[in-house]
Length: 193
Image (cartoon, rainbow, N blue to C red; front, side, top):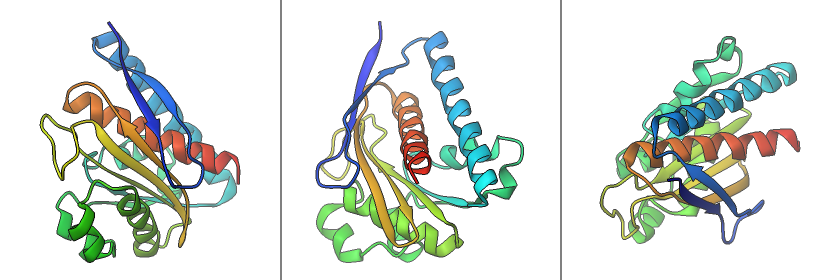
C-alpha cells in the first residue's frame, strides 16, 4: 500500500497543506527519487537562467538535499554550497540560529528552520537559502514524533516560506519526503519571484 504524509505550516508566509504519497515499495521509491531529480533539474535550469545562487542548511537530510542539486550537470553555476548542521549547537555556531530559541524549543521548530535558511544565505553569500530540520526516526527527538520536519526558504534575510511536514515511513522515506518537500517549496518560491 501507499503511505501518506501531510505538509503544511502554521504561522508562516506561504503556508500550504499538501499530501504526498510516501514510498513503501521499490517502484514508488524510484518514483520519489525521480521527482527529486526532476525538481533539482528544474531549479538548476531556472536559477542558471536568472543568474541566481542557492545554498542549503541541512539537519535530518544530512547532505542529501545539496547532493540532489549537485547531481545535476551545470549545478556549479548555482549551488554555492551546503552545511550539514546535524548537531544542535552547530545550528547556532555555523548558521547563527538563536541559542536561546534552540534551548527553549529544540532544533525541530519552524523558526529554527527559518533562521537556518537565513543563516546559510549569509554564510554562503547566496541569493536563496534552503533549510531542513526534523526527526527522521525511528523514535522521537526534542519532544517531536518521528516524521516531523520543517523546511524553509529565504532570500537573504527575508524568510519567504516555512512548511511543516508529517511524514510516514522509515528513516529513508522521511528523509526522501523532506528533500522532495524542500525542493518543491523552493521551486514554488522561485517560480513566483
